Length: 394
Ligand code: UD1
Ligand code: UDP
Image 1 (tube, rainbow, N blue to C red):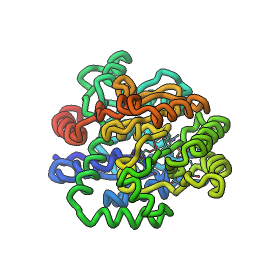
Image 2 (image 1 turned 180 degrees about the horizontal axis):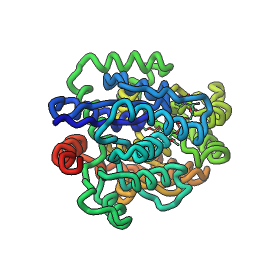
Image 3 (image 1 turned 90 degrees about the vertical axis):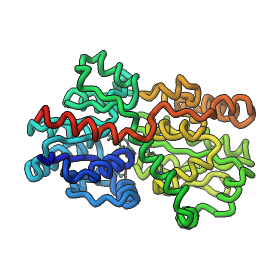
Image 4 (image 1 turned 30 degrees about the vertical axis):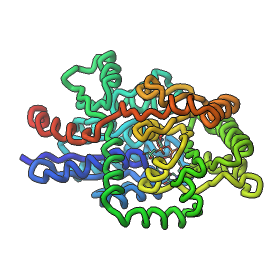
């Protein structure tokens, strides 16, 4: 009997992490009917990923509004999912991680009595406002879930502490590593891809002579991203001032920041760092396609970010990561010493970055390639589990 699996996602990171799973499920049309719903919580940043992985959604709730808030997203997803579930009648709904999309979709599934599978289950800080609202989103989603696909043993332990039955927790690795390996493999095998990447970077406003200098290690690249809600306001001002001060001090280093489209991010970043006259080694560009982003991640010297996904990808590529948060739900790389928490404190950001730029010993210590988050086979494990277990619960 063919089982109907409905995957729901809506933001850039969810799409990157669910894309390889869509592909894996679709390899077995005799076992699974794979239905993809995108909520469109993100628009441009979601569509970039759908295009790269060649995914045409079956349903698109198209909910994004400029400057939306948590009430907008949650209510639109919850209401939109009612119709999708009634129309598609899935046997199981798969959601991912900790966004408003995933929690609202899981709740919609619960209201319709459809079992939920949670991909990237069990990540915790146990600090309800850090990250906000993601910590509580994932805890709520966990309560609504039947199959918990935990990326690591530590995530499994968190779920066990919360009394999740052992047999419902499956340690799979993180599907982001599957996505990363898919892209790295493409780069390795498709000779013409470098040309495509170069011309996309050029169109994004990045000078190819500069890219060549990063490729030849003549200049060092600091790759920056930031978007966390708990950093809005003074946090972002401090982050931007730290970047501005560092760029002034290290003229021989380049600071590239693909700026998230959230107006709360665009505002301070453009006003503090946007003046090319005084910040001529700071490059602000639009969010990059995943392919180009991974290419630059490989070329980068250090990563400065508050992102969750990048904390998982960069250590595998041997890149030191300074994380602009006070806590992380991904402690594995922290324990391995390749990731360091610097918060949004200006002095902490500048001094930690200076130490890495000035002291080769400190740099080497943080740049040992280490990959605690997966081996590229997470999707295979999830699909195998669904094959075996769906029969028994349905
Ligand atoms: C969301 C997630 C966060 C995740 C992040 C990944 C929630 C509550 N937040 O935060 O967990 O880490 O995505 O990036 O689920 N915008 C665009 N185009 C886009 C995307 C965003 O214009 O393609 C702008 C819009 O003005 C939108 C705003 O950004 O209203 C905020 O988007 P939203 O998804 O609500 O919040 P994020 O900060 O992106
Ligand atoms: N990313 C991307 N283009 C960019 C910046 C990031 O494709 O310009 C990718 C990155 O490699 C990672 C994901 O987006 O896989 C992280 O998304 P984000 O930081 O927005 O969300 P989070 O992971 O914090 O939820």
